[in-house]
Length: 504
View: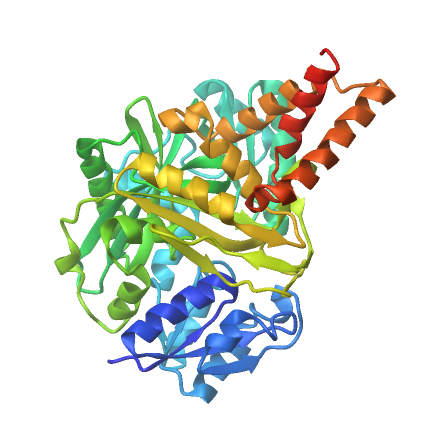
């Protein structure tokens, strides 16, 4: 079947990203939108657009019946779910097919296995894919969790069987911490996913988060496109990704790629997917599989010269992927997630109207975005505004290009994560490629201590000086490098300078 029109069951930058691939393929697009998104870019770029009503996800982008109804009404042949919302909802995938439409994604059966961490662990063990030592079945209560943790040895992780996004996960260092951590994590998982089942997993010390991109067709062919390094993260939320990883050599790449192909084959996977691993001291362990396109897919596209969205569409049409096998990485790509967040205030969402916007340009620059001047950033959806991608012939060129991008960037009206990303990219650890999943939180804590000492200042004069330094730094920032607006650690440099002036 040749797809002529696709309804995109999503919003923001990923909806725009899918529309661009559709245009390249000569496919028309149908947008859906909430009241808050009535003037969004994905609505403007579509051939057709239909309102969902409401503002919250439950009132809009999670209304599966209405979305399928609109798809049929618009004459769409298929639905692409993007990421988030209904992208990993097996029932939605089945309902789309039952309505006589193509679902551009994996089967509900594959989602069910890989969406349940216990089921996926069992499937991977059977397939011979290495997994982190841990529970085979869900633990019934905190006492059983403590018993298993005692046997494994601390530290361990208590993890929710369902869901993702860092919810329902706690690291436990002693037996005395188990009960409180179990109850909190289980309650969080029950609230977020409707499933409070937990399991225990050995905590891998200073791991790196490495993921392998796969494409699989309905004919049994599976190919991989090397790895992405996703270890710069906070509370399991990624900030900076790069491809290839600075620590993975060709032999390791092939070993991990082979394991990812085996993982996808074991569940009869179809479409694009990402197999995630923990890497530590030269060994890797299966973590989970994301049964959808990933936020960071763009860096793989740059390094492997492939349009993953277009390939997903072709797979849904019945095309094969075997002609894509055997590709090797060329050059290096780095992605920064530009989030409307305030790093100075525990990364709380930053709301407001984008009153000024300047994008960077030049060689090696790619921007996947759904924002525009005078657009309102609302509290209803994820805080990600855009993905900034820098490509270079090698890692250092890509890093310097990303620095340039962040320095040229200006987003007025809301605070963003651009500043903390700029600082991290200039850190010795990032430059040397010597970091792990705990790096970002350690880095921010060290910067805080450098700025104000091991203890918060209790002298009013000192506090006032630091606050004044923050304001001066922000004012100067507008005059010089406006792209670093909303820098998470801009106050650090100012505070240090102020302390030096005052003799500290």
